[in-house]
Amino acid sequence: MSAVPAVTALIAEDEAPQRRALHEQLQQAWPELDIVAVCEDGVSALEAVEAQRPAVAFLDIRMPGVSGLDVARAVVERGGLVVFTTAYDDYAVRAFEAGAADYLLKPVQPARLEQAVARVRGRLDERRARTGGPDLRALIDDLESRLRPQGERLIRWITASAGDSVRMIGIGEVLFFQAQEKYVRVVTADGEGVIRTPLKELLAGLDPDEFWQVHRGTVVRVQAIDRVSKNELGRHSLSLKGHAERLPVSGAFLHRFRGM
Picture 1 (cartoon, one colour):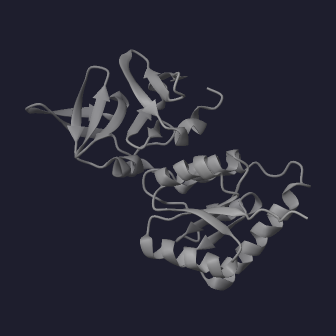
Picture 2 (spheres, rainbow, N blue to C red):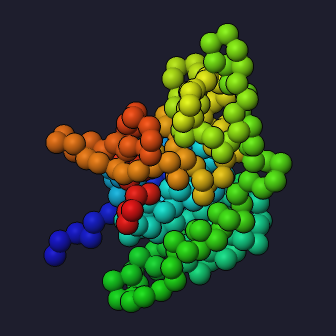
Picture 3 (tube, one colour):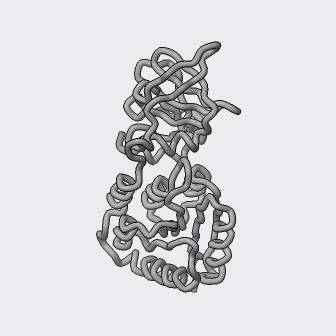
């Protein structure tokens, strides 16, 4: 009789002490679990999801930049289960009990983690026989709408350096942001400037319905995207409406363009 393959898992948590603690607790609560990636940010987690296709992902919801919700979409699309970790006993998270395998409040308590592990293992055992079930992608969209920046938390203006002057750029003018060493380019239809604000901080103040991260160093206005193409080497890039520059799209973010 052939051995049952090990269940693979990913951990994504931006706080190092909590990342280490969850890793150690999982090793104790589920010794046979094969933890294939331990990630400190959402971009690394997306790349690991693409490369490893874990069966289960333990995701911090509120990571800066690419959130746990973005990573969850990629996990679910590849048939995996999700366990969210959060410091907030938010009622919105409770809605995920029907779709996600579970959620854990931080700091994670060993007894509560054991309950989550039991639930995940039960879901994995049932998955072959189960047909239908809750639409986790719809639940992710709902939770994102509840947690996204609102009102004064949304960026409305960018003050960017342009040569010897300073440009005031309304957020509605921006085509894309692109990280370049110490600066971030802010590109509009009629020019560009640079800012020192890191891309991760920018993402926290951008409406996720209007701006998508498509590469570790690039965030694009969705309405500005014309098409996504693949070259002979299998690399993807996108073109913008009325703008000649092409932008790279990493494999970790291709799930955004399914059905476009």
